[in-house]
Length: 71
Image (cartoon, rainbow, N blue to C red; front, side, top):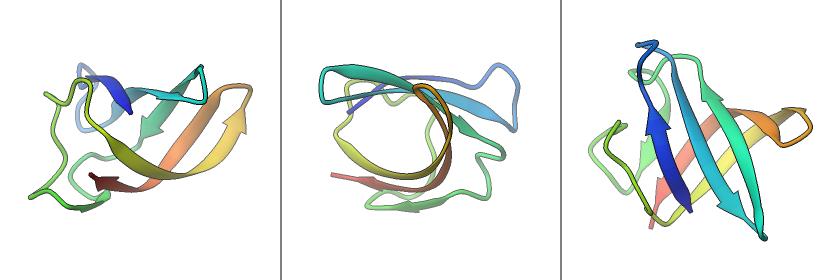
């Protein structure tokens, strides 16, 4: 679940994603070029949004987003 999105460093974004009782910080290098399925595009307004996130792990509880599927 996408808990919140921070777009203050646009076009980059940072998402907080909750999964398995753990919060992850996911980085989106360019929110205009990330592949989003199930929605028209990336939104900085997503809160408590069910989603499947494909990512590359970059550290403890951090990752870089590859694709987002809104459910």
